[in-house]
Image (cartoon, rainbow, N blue to C red):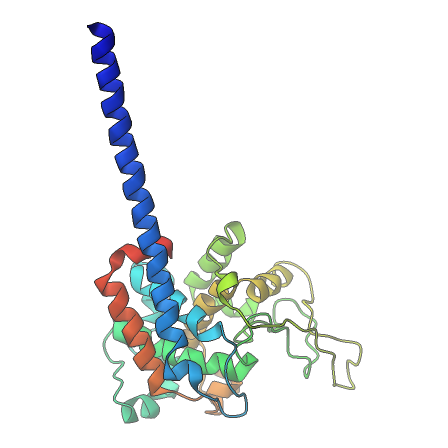
Length: 291
């Protein structure tokens, strides 16, 4: 009888463990299916179909990739970098805030940024989409600007938004992002950014004719350039914080020339796409486990 009881107990334990495993697998499948739905929302949007001034249409993976990283931010409002990105306009860095520089454009589009929260976060990502197209045509692996003779690893710009290692002084959260992605690159989402061909560009500047767009300098700036060119999630999360803390309005107080010179397009259809992504995440919070 004892053997029978033990067999029954073992069978029950196996059934409990199996049920838990099946439930976990089902949850994982549902989360992955949710990611596919987010990509579908983004890839079929007017934002993805738009031809940007002077840049054309974005690479196939750019808009869906940004959408997934925005969804990750919606899932984790407690993160230090997300709190900066979602802060009320001007709260992060006064007139250095890209949302302040573009205040009239946001007002014209009916996009308020005077209250901290997910709407302001979404509007920051909307402007970030246009900034990425202007700075790199949506190519996360873009190297440093070869029109300038940067040779200092700490100031050489690279990646989607042509930011630099030195920009991290504008928010403690930037150093935290660099440390986290240096340690763990599993969240880079590189495979989501399809349709991009990484190229090495040669200098056209007579003052540095032998330069190219490869990473330059010494660590940690050199390592930062390599990371931002290979990890689009890091580039985007880093970029949106810099956009909120040191975007403009002047060359002396701004990281992004296209923001300072008002060359970035603020596209309402990109806000609409991100709003749909936000609504999907809020309705299906289980997707956060896959992000």
